[in-house]
Amino acid sequence: MNSPLKQDLNPKEKQELARLVYRCTMWVSISDEDGGGSSRSAEDRVLKKRMQTLYRNTRLGTNEREILGIILANSQYWKSWCEGLIDLMDEIARYQERIPPKLAEMIMALAMDVAMAFEERSAFSSFFVRAGFRIRNIFSSSGSILSPEEHASISPNEKAALKELAFALKVDVSGL
Image 1 (tube, rainbow, N blue to C red):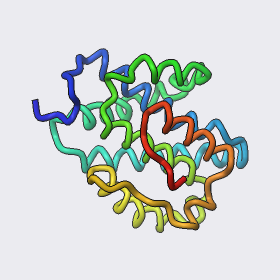
Image 2 (spheres, rainbow, N blue to C red; image 1 turned 90 degrees about the vertical axis):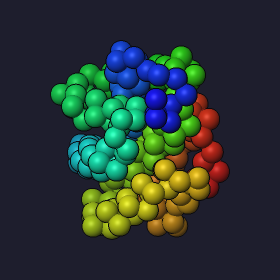
Image 3 (cartoon, rainbow, N blue to C red; image 1 turned 135 degrees about the vertical axis):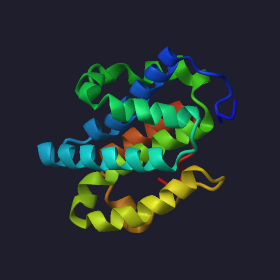
């Protein structure tokens, strides 16, 4: 199989990983209560747009594309997927062997976009410029480095959540 995943995934595993990817992004969103409902709405819009862009730019036939497709096709379940986030780190540990490095990097990129979403609402056009660079970085060997403006737009609670998520996924975020 041409998938970057080490193992072939069955449909149930893909569904579970799709749920896990979404839960990871919401872990960061829920970590910061600043902005209330308007920030949550902005985060949802940015996340959906970002996943659509990643889906279009991900190679056909890969498990990553299928997982993104599952997330996008099941948006009616997103609210229920956010229940019980307290168990997220245990879920990540349970699926650790099934999460390849590229998917873990994709999760972190999505989570960082969610962390910056509320700030992006006022400068939404700049998001699309940076999104292009970030997409390239997800699928390249070099990671993305946050600009000072991006770094400042992430709250201390979101930074802590991102670091905890990165540790669980075994992704280096030393620049955060």
